[in-house]
Length: 460
Ligand SMILES: Cc1c2[nH]c(c1CCC(=O)O)Cc1[nH]c(c(CCC(=O)O)c1C)Cc1[nH]c(c(CCC(=O)O)c1C)Cc1[nH]c(c(C)c1CCC(=O)O)C2
Image 1: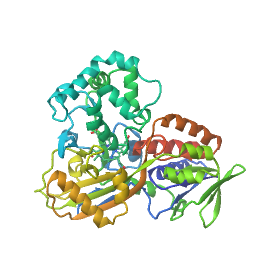
Image 2: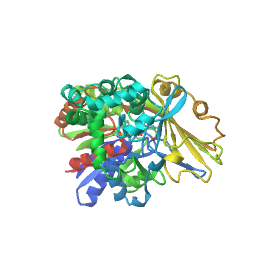
Image 3: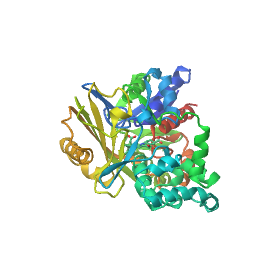
Image 4: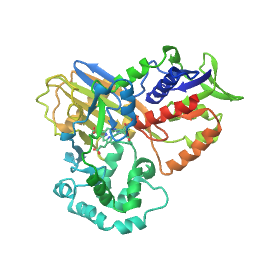
């Protein structure tokens, strides 16, 4: 019997446990113990259902293009629950000088595929529009001068489109996906497809248009579950043997003895053949440090914190919002807010008749400061910030506040090389796997893909 420890009960740890449970059913002699330090499973994936509102406390969807979340959801019998985002009314706004300005239609991140839509947009100055047009004619130069090494997202975007595009959409889009600083984020780690487009075509616009021409009907950008992503967590838990799960059990230390792993929880020491480390990177790093200090060094990275506030407004027909999914706030403006989502416009069936949901995000330094305030205070600040931008808001019927400290690791320049070295060091330890959002991707699909692959190799 192979014994496998899983440290951490977020989406990565739960998916690993689920995959191992499936392998047991297929006749593999495996047993797993999942250690979760808190008393609840799912990590930052959590859905609150109250008064007819469906409020997400963490992620609200996955990126449709990445297939691994959908496959798992279908396998769990939840195919009927899958819904697309309402892309017929998709629009993302950017807050410029206190006003919400729509990003032009047909943008792929900061790359336009529809130059006519770009030209009629109010978001950019004539100079910025010209810089987009010029990017196509600069294809040859951009291709031959593409750097051999990694660089920051900021220098990459700047080389293609200049200052204004970087400030108005480059920085806000990246903070709405990676919560980070474009001058530090690695373009190869966080925008790999764009680096490949540059290598092949020089011009990103030419590459994106070539691709758009071959894609018949693009799928909706986001996918979610009708009853909320908490349903995915519930179904994973139901598929894992209950005696595998240890809630409120914090792993205090990890060590190796002969070919085994020892895990100490402060209550007892247990022996395992393999360890799947699915805790947040800083926790994982501290546990691994005594065994493999060089691996731990490679795991030292900054992580941004988030504070998420969801408001459910009943009978809120008076609250009129711009059409679309929400808005992003460029870093460096005078707002605490990082972004907001118009949840009932982004997805169907989130609210009772006449209801609306707004979700506010705080990140970076603002999140770290807010983290210390009480829930009521955080909610009041979120309401004030939203009202400043959207106009007066009614009294919410439901409010949820969540703090997610250091929840989003920052993939800094050189990340891919560091991860290749980390992989080498980790594989030399035999029987250790690192899972979660610190290494090979930050969204649900990437975490699910990695956890399943790791469980399969850990079990055999
Ligand atoms: C602030 C923030 C958000 N979402 C996120 C943050 C960062 C801070 C943090 O979580 O700690 C995190 C995020 N956002 C996205 C991912 C998944 C990435 C992946 O799977 O590759 C992740 C991990 C997709 C996304 N999130 C967003 C995009 C860009 C969508 C586009 O091109 O229009 C992607 C791919 C944009 C976004 N993101 C957000 C808003 C309000 C918006 C705009 C409106 C909306 O859609 O709700 C919220």
